[in-house]
Amino acid sequence: MGCLIALAALISARLALVIVALSGDLLSRSFDGSWALPFLGFLLLPWTTLAYALLWSSGRHITGIEWFFVVLAFLVDLGAYGTGQRARTERSTSGV
Image (cartoon, rainbow, N blue to C red; front, side, top):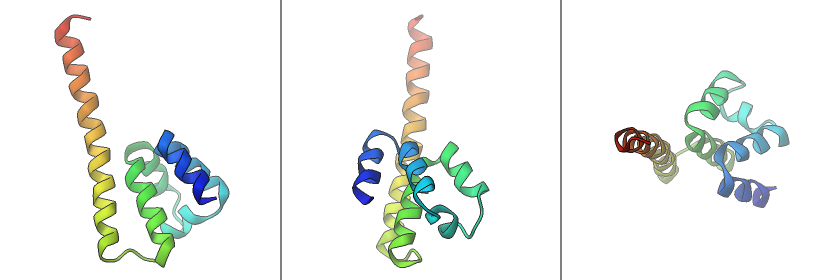
């Protein structure tokens, strides 16, 4: 199952989150049974949500270097928003 999630993550973090959600209760266990936080993560920060859930499942909590990977995923999510905003700005100034 891990290889399928990794392959889906190469395509889209949201697709990988859907596979994780359908394959078991990992998201609900990692977010203490809540459905709202994983849903918001799916919409706003998919890489961060995926990293947190997968790293939480490895040791049932996140410690040390694992937080580095969660922060790195957060930066990837922020970078995606920044790239999208820059593309919209360039498109509007070029008159297309």
